[in-house]
Length: 386
Image 1: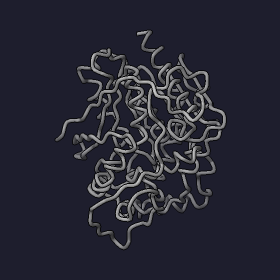
Image 2: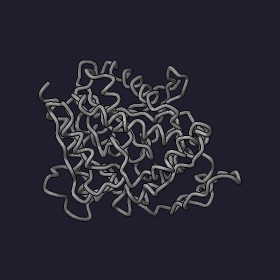
Image 3: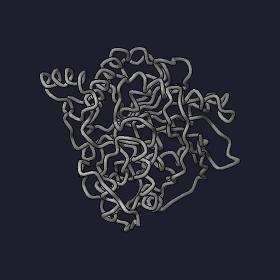
Image 4: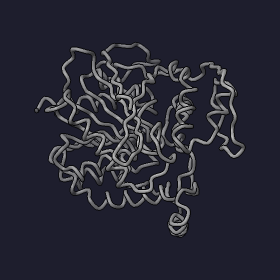
């Protein structure tokens, strides 16, 4: 078992903006402008199954790497081979590819990672991150985590079973509560680490990760000092759901062929990334799940949101909710409903006009930095109260 790797980052100032940042940004810390047309090569000889899904071609990489990215990624070994083949690509995108694995109580090997501030900088708190359905705990989150870490926070994340570099059938969630328990198990170990013992603990969830973060909080009411939700999946937007009659059929099919990729599929990248350049960059995250949703997964997500919707009044921790007003994946009106229903005495809702689903990574840089600043400022204030 490899130890989880911790990266340390110092705060630094960059002048990378094609236009001036908005006035609320005092000091952008991190490199979010990523080149979208690098040239890469590969000497790897590849053999791709004829049945593999043909993904859209990734700009700026060799035919060999494109072929590898198009192979079947259902199981973790193939996802790890593809990720390794793209190491050069990711390094040129300013990502650090140190990996750590641990085996959980269900016997699954889980990929996990942590980011810490520069040595000598006092640690303010631990921030545990839950990624979204079409994402991983690395790639875009690398830049976000580095910036938060540079502000004095220990940032911890994992790939869920079946996602990213963790074991499990790709994109398959047979039981949403089991996934939540896997997250609780991992973050319980994090909270017991000597460097964070006695410090405030916060949980941050994006999209599906927002639903997971809420479920974690509802199962552990008194163990978190705050919950941050970014475009949370408290309810799936109406436009993302199939018609009711078809949904009944899909529910029946999920009981006999749960792993089948038959749920109606929309191009989430177009709905997530408002900035076209960042939409192109998303294609380099070759191990993210971008196939049609598996039947059981779809039904579990729907069931989880229905359960969460019925328990919003039980949300009691200090709460920060961030949502794009133009989000068509998760409904910002539901975030408004959560804000109104939550019993938290300390709660804040921020709606970003014109923004899509991916407000952490898919917007123009000034908006991205504004969102990051809002998160860091919220954390700083709550830590100052401890």
